[in-house]
Each structure stands twice: as structure tokens, then as C-alpha cells.
Amino acid sequence: MASKEPLVISDKNQMRKWSRRMRSQGKTIGLVPTMGYLHEGHISLIRQAHNLADVIAVSIYVNPGQFSPTEDLSTYPSDFDGDIRKLMAVSGGVDVVFHPHNLYDYGSNTKKTKSGSDNDGVVLSCIEEKGMGHETWVRVENLEKGLCGKSRPIFFRGVATIVTKLFNIVEPDVAVFGKKDYQQWRIIQRMVRDLDFSVEVIGSEITRESDGLAMSSRNVHLLPEERKKALSISKSLLGAKSAAENGQVNCEKLRNLVIQAVSEAGGRIDYAEIVDQESLETVESIKSPAVFCVAAWFGKVRLIDNMEINL
Amino acid sequence: MASKEPLVISDKNQMRKWSRRMRSQGKTIGLVPTMGYLHEGHISLIRQAHNLADVIAVSIYVNPGQFSPTEDLSTYPSDFDGDIRKLMAVSGGVDVVFHPHNLYDYGSNTKKTKSGSDNDGVVLSCIEEKGMGHETWVRVENLEKGLCGKSRPIFFRGVATIVTKLFNIVEPDVAVFGKKDYQQWRIIQRMVRDLDFSVEVIGSEITRESDGLAMSSRNVHLLPEERKKALSISKSLLGAKSAAENGQVNCEKLRNLVIQAVSEAGGRIDYAEIVDQESLETVESIKSPAVFCVAAWFGKVRLIDNMEINL
Image (cartoon, rainbow over all chains, first blue to last red; front, side, top):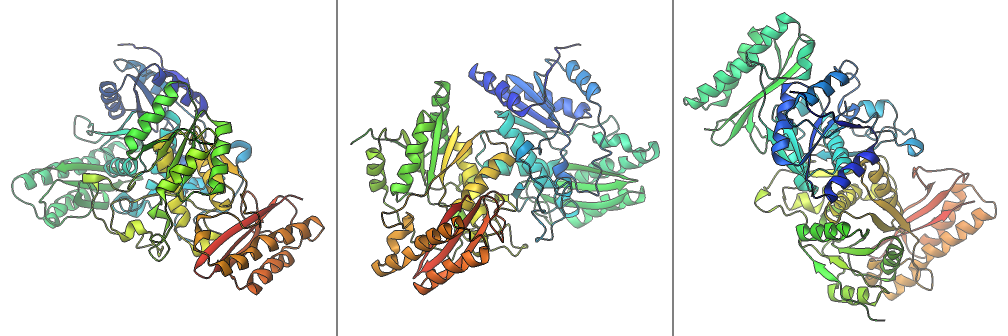
């Protein structure tokens, strides 16, 4: 079903102007922030946004601020024309695609500076590596630490900062994030609360391939053999969830189910943790709503997945 | 000249509602953030805001997030009724006073947490000390380091964070800050640029007593004798500026003029630095717009002052 073609805006002032015009017309604005290379998971976020807001903005921007220089910024997949086609196929379409070139370029105000974090022993992002003048970062100091924060210490600093920027540019009423990035979703929720953003943050359920693999733009990099092996993540998570529902609430044992299955399939576990759904603190035994979060490498691809366990 | 009584709002949602109503009427909103105990310096900021915006909001909130537990939060002076009288005496008055009780209380969403910074060796603010759930902080990583940042390592983290919160609640078009807090002004400017806030940040000139003392709410704590001695700051800064204008551009020599004068008057220098007006990096010789920044203790009172030097 073909739908309207979205307006594509790359300039941030024009983007804000569009939003303010919509608001002055009494319309509520939904934002779905993405890094592009859209798949069915993104589309499900857009569908959800349609239920919550009058007009929909989708941002497509691969944020260098959340990649360390050694990570896969340069190979992150992109297909802007394909993305637009996919957006046009969504029922109701989207109203605007915000596709900025560089959100850290402040023109004549940009001045090469020393890294801001050089004293703190913090691994730096591609922003500092390029000597851009940007030096303001938003940090959600507790939630950013565990899970993905351990192996990607500047990741959530970059995420919280770019989302702040997008919120300030797009000025949405509601923003939809995928629960696949569970920690990211909780961090954005906390940030919105702590910084008094006037944005409702919605977490949308994980979309999976028919065989259970959580959808991810990075899946495209998996070799066919790796893709099969990667199914061990969702399968073992489902097994652990089911075991918990059948009375096995000992997290050590549940974790071992997943670690063993993924390792046997040839994956390299980054972490497999069962944490409280809100505080993301490790739990030893499942007594309250928990979430089982996994990150593992298959070949050169790092995949994440998770499953909520509500007993 | 008596003026209208300002509307006093303590609830943040009501505050935002007021701003949005004003905006929907086509009015621009000016914000003057203060910690109360208003003096002529604050009034000059409000006058400037009147030139720049249609309606004026003044926030009065002593922000615990920028005080360390050992600093003077508990003795910071306040006089809300007196403040309202002073605001009513301003030509044109002010439209609204935002006077929240506690901007870090998230109600049922607040949960006691561990300190967010315990691993980083960072001195904590009164927020962490009280075990409040707040854990999101905005940091301007370079500019926050020097000058006042050295002796008050969490100060600008607290300032940037509360200003972000105020911007998100009041949603102003323009905000006026005093240049007396020079580093603070530059940090807010940088933060607004880096985080894409849609707020114009204005720096307003220092207001001085007739004898030259920079106005400050903390001056009330100076004993009469200390107050006299404290004049050594502004006098020696003026001397240094005049020396620079007469050809003495060696910063070491200029700094010694001030350090010597303040020390001889019985002040204890925290810092006396000549820095670039934008980067706030120390300069050795004045070749481009610089600012001479001083912090010194007189008795139990820490005072700051500065003078721009544009040769």
C-alpha cells in the first residue's frame, strides 16, 4: 500500500519550525529516532507512534557521539532511498524525515578543542577523535554503568546526548524507543524525568524474525552460518524465561542456561545478566519484574537481545 | 514606582502551561534564573530581559545540585517576600515568578539510589548526599574544569543541569545571565549550542555598588570590616585592566598586581587567572579578548569578580 512521500528536512532550524507550526495547529508530534537502515522493528515503532500522536517525525542519523573510534561507525549499514520507500509503505506514512548531515558541526562557532575527558580515563567517542568543538554531554550516571555500559563506556553518554539534541530540535510530545535496546529505553526514561523534558517516552516490544532472531540493522552483517548460530540467543532466552515461569528463579542457574547455549553455538558472550526492570541492578533471584539481557558476538557482529520476566 | 504583582507558580507543569499559553498568544518569553535574595544586579538582568522578550519569568530556586555538602547551602540567604517587593518595583514588573519547592523530587518515581559518581572520585552534591533518585547530569566537559571548577568540582555540573531543567520547564526564548558569573555564562552558552536548545543566552554586565564591589547575595554575610577589605578585588582588577590598556600585557605581572593587593588586604586568593573570553584557557600575554577572573575568601565568604580586557 503506497502512502504519501515524507518531507525530508536536513536543517535543524527548519525541523524545529515545522514542529512549531504543527503544534500551533494543535497537533501533537511523535518522534521515532533511528539510525536508518530501517527494518520491521522500526516500522513497528512508527505504527505505535501513529496511535499516540497526530503527526510523525522519523529521524535518520547515525550518531558518531555514541561510537568509540574502534567501533563500527564506518561500516554501519545505510540505505536512505530504501528507508524512504519503506516509510512510504507504512500505513499512514510518516510526515517528516529529519536527516541531518552533522549534528555536531556548529559552523564558525566550532573550534578544535582538547578532549573534554582526557583527565578522567574515559574512552572517547568519534566526536572527540575528530577534534570537534562539541563538549557537552548528558550522563545518566547509574543506569549507564552496567550491561552494555561496561564494554561500551561512552555509548550511553552519546545516546543521552543525541536524544537531548533531537528532543530540543524536534520538540516532540511523544517519542517511541524499542525495548530491544532495553537499557537505552530505561536511560532515556530516566533522563526525561530527571531533566524535566516534556516528552512522553514509550517502549515498544521487540520485533523478531519468524525464527525468533531480534531484528537489528546489524543482522545484515551476519554470514548465513553465523545467523543460524545467533538463534541460540533468543532460543535460550525463551528457555530461561520458561524455566523461570516453571519455578526456577535462581539467576545463576538461569544465566548458565543462556551462557552455555550461546557458547556452544560458537557465540562469545559479552554479558548475560538478569536485572531489575527499572534500576537495572543485578538480581540473584527473581522476585519482582526482571529482564534477562544478553550481548554476544558472532563473528564480527555484536548482537543484543533481552526478555522481560514477569512472574 | 509600584508595578503589577507577579503570578507565583511553584508547580512545574503549571509553569510550562503558562509559558505555552503565552507562546500560543504569539508572545516571546524571557527567563531570568536566580537563587533569590535579589539585589540590583538581578534587577538589571530583568531590565535587560524586558528589552528582549514580551513576558518575563524570574525563577527563584536555591539549587542543591550545585552545592557540595560542605558548602553554604544551608546559610544561603533568602527573603521571598522581600524579593517579590523588589520585583514589583521594577519598571514593567515581572509576569511570573517560578518558585518550586524541590526540583529533584520525582514523587513515587523517586527511589533512593547509590551515588552515581562513586567510582569516579568526584566530590558529590547535596543531591547525592540526600540519596535522591536523581542521576542525570549535564556536563560541559572543558569549560567546567578551570577557574571555579577547580575548587568547586561539581558546581558547574549542577548549574548546567538545573538550567537544563529550567529551560525544559519554562521553555523561554531568551535567558539572561550575569557576567559576574562569567564562567557560568560561557558554560550555559556552550551548553545551549551543543545541546541545540532553542534559547538565546544573553550575558549582562556586572552591577557594582557605588564603591566598586560587585553585587552578590553573599555580600550580606561580610562583616563591615571584611566588606572594606573586599574592595581590594575590584580595585586591583581595575588597576590591572588599566595597566593592560597602558601596554602591560604580561599576564604574570598583571596577576601579581591583583594577588598582592587582595592578599595584603587580608583576602585569601582561590584563583586569579587571565583567560581567553571564549575558551577560558589561560593566556600568558594578552593578545586577544581576555577576562581577568578572581575568586577570594574574606572571612567565611567566598567572592568572585572579573573584568573583561579588550585591547
